[in-house]
Image (cartoon, rainbow, N blue to C red):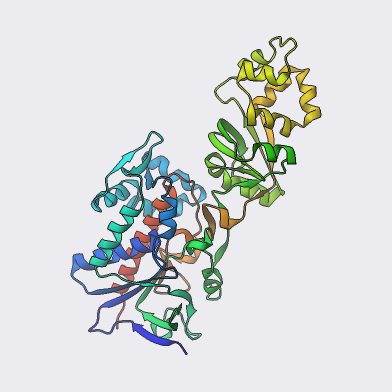
Length: 438
């Protein structure tokens, strides 16, 4: 039997809250509770448990290429980035959104700047100094950290909200049970399992009657059935300044410009990630997704057609396209790959058709890449299974972060919503505690 460590307070003891998960959502929940207790001079014991040897591992890895903390676009546009989940997230983002995120970072002694893309970064572009300052503040506020504590469920078979049943953790010293007055779950989604987000919590909650939408890849690459020749020659080549025309989740065609990379077995990169939710749903419904590439997004069809139809003399079409349009390398390879050699040869005799293909080149995606390769995941605890931040089936148990059923593109939207939901869970947990009797 696991040793029971009782964190549930008596009338003379402080309230005790167990937070499970040391990513941004869990850390922000801890900060919110600590600040509320300090402001009201009410004793509160906060214990944060994480399965990994240290907290914030995904946060640190995401910041290696430049720590994008939020986005500087107007709030009215910002919230639309959450698509179908905008109604559920709007209130928490209004409470702790982009402006509050920047103010919080500044409060930790880290200055920020807004890049040309409106993305917001720390001036040194690094995540580690921000995390160190944050942890220092949390420890100073009395938050206790328990590393290598992997949550494996509840002790006994009664109501998991009953502190006497206990939260079960596997630790290097064996299995232990921890009881608390309230619990905040911030266990992440299903991507980057090596950093702790492995979705192992899903069956634990489902067994307690919590509705969970299946975890699927978001901000991910996709498989394409390239020929061996194209894959061997162009894998790793970037496609700069292209546009994609594809159907959104609402079925309407949308056009987005940016960059992506050809991989050995498909495509990945920021432009692909931005469209990944709709593409994933198309594949789930139809077995594949068809997109169209505009290889010259800054050129009109008329201009492309005029250049293609100019006499090329003895030059090959490849040389002609390179000299007149600058189409070479991977873009030239894509024309042949997507059209096929026979169709490409036929269109060389009909330049107007070739111009249309350059502006609207079909590319079929066969499957999203595995969830563990994805930047983030979609799916998770359904919002209709929650009362605010509390799980309806489990009174006193709250959830936050990527384990909730939402998704967003990269660009600071993921981190902002994780922080906002952690803040909301902390506030709701505090309000719930104040309504309890001992």
